Length: 158
Image (cartoon, rainbow, N blue to C red; front, side, top):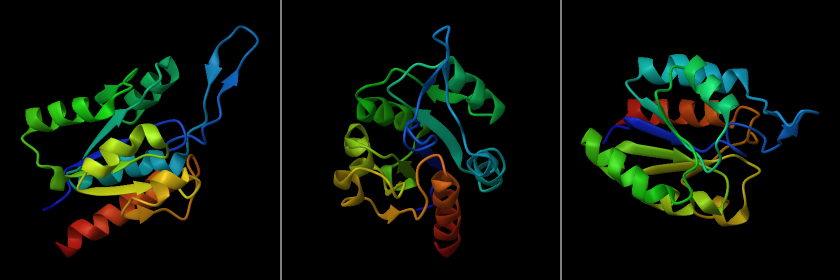
C-alpha cells in the first residue's frame, strides 16, 4: 500500500529535545528548516498528510504547525495509539498506509502499529531496535526530512 499519512512526534524528533526557557518563563524550541520544507512542500505534492501527535502542549508548536499548513495537530496526548487508531478510522486508512516517526518509548506502541516506522539517529535504544528505518540524522537536525525522502522513494517503488 502507498503511505498516505505521516505522523510525527515533536520533542526529540522535530526538535533536538531541548527546551529553552526565557526569563519570563516563555518556552522556545528550535525547528529545522529542511524538515519544514519537506513537511510543507514534499508531503502534499506526494499526497501524504502530515500529522503531529505529541505529549506536550506548546503555543510555539501550534505556531510552527500553522506555518507548515499542518491542520492535524494533537497536543497533550500521552497515550498516542488510541488517538491514532481513531484518526485513521475517520480517514478510512489502514495501518499499512501510515508512517510514524518518533524517538522515545512513549512512541513505541504507535511505531509498532504503523505500516512504516522511523526514528532519528539519536533515539532511545528501545526505538532504534524496532523501527523500519533509522535516520542518519539526529532529531531536530533533518531526520524528519530524511524520513520523508525515504517514504517518497518507498511510495515510488510500490
